[in-house]
Length: 147
Image (tube, rainbow, N blue to C red):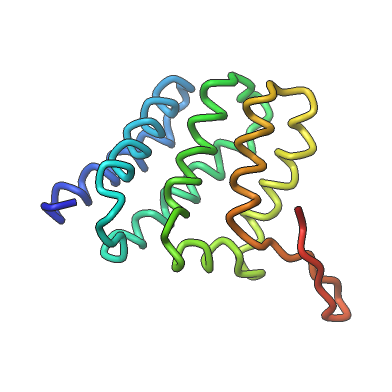
C-alpha cells in the first residue's frame, strides 16, 4: 500500500466489481483484494478503512443472494472478508456494531444455508465468525454472542 492513491483505486475497482452481475467477476475481485491485503499485511489499513467498509458491504450484498452457490466464489468472498478483518480492529468493531446488523444477518443466513453448500464454504464461515463477536440482542437489552 505504498502508493495511497493507487491502493485506493485498486480497492475502488474491486468494490465496483463486486456489483457485477457475473459471479466470476466478483470471484476475481475478491481474489485480487485478498491478495493485495495479504501482500501488505504488515502495513496499516487505517487510510483505507472507509473503502474497506464499502468492500464489506459489497461482499455482504453478494453473500445475501441465494443464487450464488458456486463454491469457489463463496469461499473467495468470505475469505476476502477474513483478510479485511485480520489485524484491523476498526473493521471488526464496524461489523460487530449492533447497529450494523446487516453483517450479522447475512452471516447467520449464510450459516443456515451452508448445510447444503460445500464443506469449504462452511469452514470459511466458521473462520469469519471466529474473528468477530456478533451479538443477538432482544428488546429487553440482554445480549448473547452468536457462533
